[in-house]
Amino acid sequence: MTTIKNFEELEIWQLARGLVNSIYSDFRECRDYAFKDQICRAGISIMNNISEGYCRGGNSEFKQFLKISKGSAGEVKNMYYIAEDQGYVLKETAKDRRAKAQRLINGNSSLIKYLRSYR
Image (tube, rainbow, N blue to C red; front, side):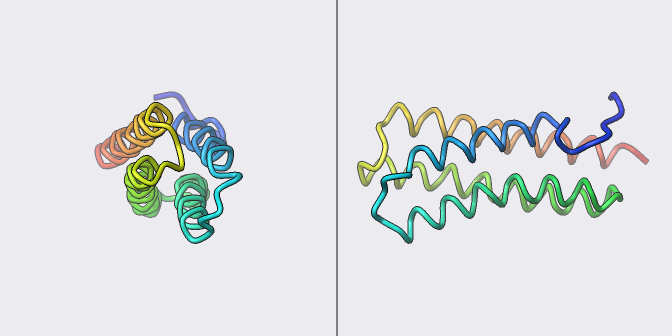
């Protein structure tokens, strides 16, 4: 694995940034403010926990923050089912966003696994 000097270089952080931008775009006009607030907060949590964990400087703390990020990605994935069911987004949009959230779940898991093996 190449040396990463900044969290912005992490592919999972880049994917999270893209997903957060999609969330904000998808729900910009949503009038269900509680839903909108929750999904935006969950999306932000994905990004923030990756960056905060990386900046802590230790593998064990980074792994813990990646686990939180992974959980937040699961929350976003779930909320897109609700958004689809409530007609807030089209089925195709929800499916795409859930796939992106799953990529983040998988990416977090892969990085956690790598950090466990790196001693």
